[in-house]
Amino acid sequence: MLRRDRKSGRAAEPRRVPPGRSEPAPQDSRVGRRPGRHSSPDYRQYSVWLRKRTRLAVDLALSEFAFQEGKKKQFSTLAEELFSDWLARHGGIRGTADET
Image (cartoon, rainbow, N blue to C red; front, side, top):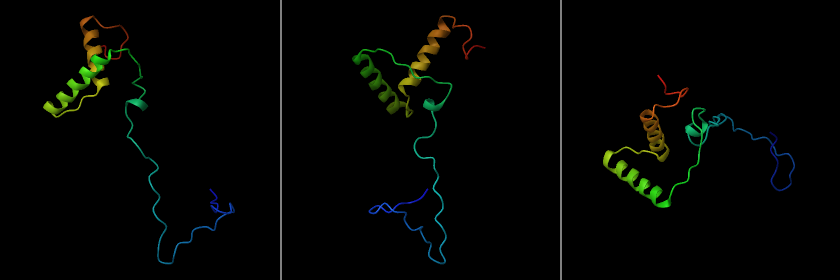
């Protein structure tokens, strides 16, 4: 892409590399978080209605769990476990990915 001078808007001179120096290595274009649930086709985001007190109690319990067990558990991981357990108790649904 053609660089422009900030003040005049005209095309800027190309950067010159002093003799004996090489061009700086190009930076990795991947910046930010590593891929996770958001970019995985196996997951889909849903919203649910929860009472504020329930959500706060769960957040506190998850924090306590992380402190005591040394493992952080996300709210969505807990919800996945609870839904999976519920499906297992109620016979599941035909065609689910967890079916064996």
